[in-house]
Figure 1 (cartoon, rainbow, N blue to C red):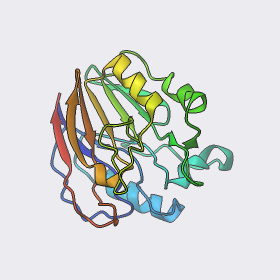
Figure 2 (cartoon, helix red, strand yellow; figure 1 turned 120 degrees about the horizontal axis):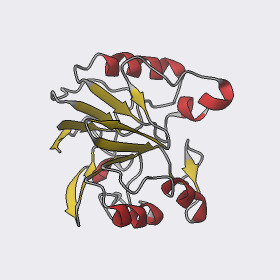
Figure 3 (spheres, rainbow, N blue to C red; figure 1 turned 45 degrees about the vertical axis):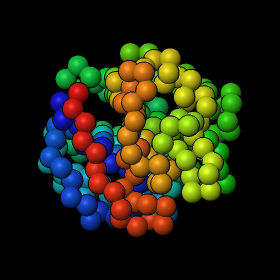
Figure 4 (spheres, helix red, strand yellow; figure 1 turned 45 degrees about the horizontal axis):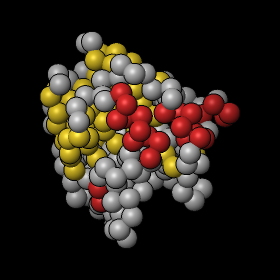
Length: 206
């Protein structure tokens, strides 16, 4: 299965997306989280030729954080939206979560420690592909000011279940890949820390 990975497009859709079986967007589809921005993203994402298209929200995507209480639409034709939920495609089990450690007053923020751990406890142990917006601590999460900003509780969970692939974004300058234990980690942020187009989609074969 050919899986194409992107994240943190922030309404910028001027990217050449490689063909594949599955296209995954790991959050921050918008800049301010408005319905108008989300509508544009959904139309663009739906237009991609991949048979399966999966996305999660990120800290900029307030539309999706407010979806439940405001009865906003989160089901879209030919797309799979995950929010602490999963799906299965051709025998591969996917799980997605928009949650990341608290930072100012962004969407889907949770306090580090027990509060955020509750979300990671929901991840099934047989997950093959894990999609989170934020990175695990110390893995492709180094900021320009020299801090590792990822989640320690998420790292513990990932090391415990060892999915085949863990894709995330959030820390734009952390773009890249690495392999630890049995897991291939991908920070798929397409914009750099200055919100400029700088990176390419990453393709993985599972």
